Image 1 (cartoon, rainbow, N blue to C red):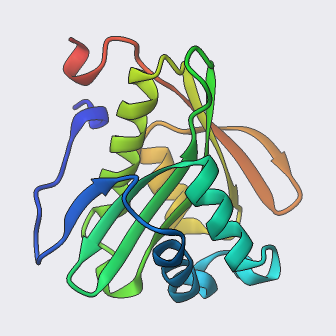
Image 2: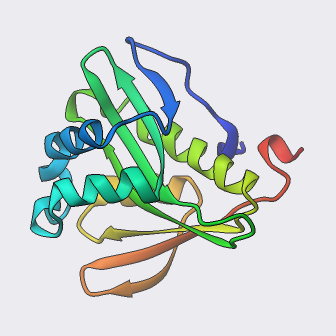
Length: 165
């Protein structure tokens, strides 16, 4: 089965959007998920500055519930004609995990990257983050480099697009 084009339907009031979150939406979401990053995100980044960089420099793929932003994938997809994109953030609030939100957001990101002419996506993940590693492997990401506690993974994007068309 081609996992590149599986979109999950809206459920439990969750809807998907692209590039609609404000800096404050992103910051609040990151604060709610901060401790789920390995190591915790606030140990590596000033969350307000990081949210500002995401809002201005990345493309965001968002899952929204009535309570606000509950899932986020942010990626640097470069200028037109760029060959490598970089996924900088994948986060889903605890109450919404296990429902396929991260998978759906990543698939949307891969489709958007492909449409921009990007050949592959890269990301960095902590070795200790077993659930993220499992998801990334299921979506076709492979380890290309390991540095200390982190693994760099890459995924070649099929130029044909969804379902080989």
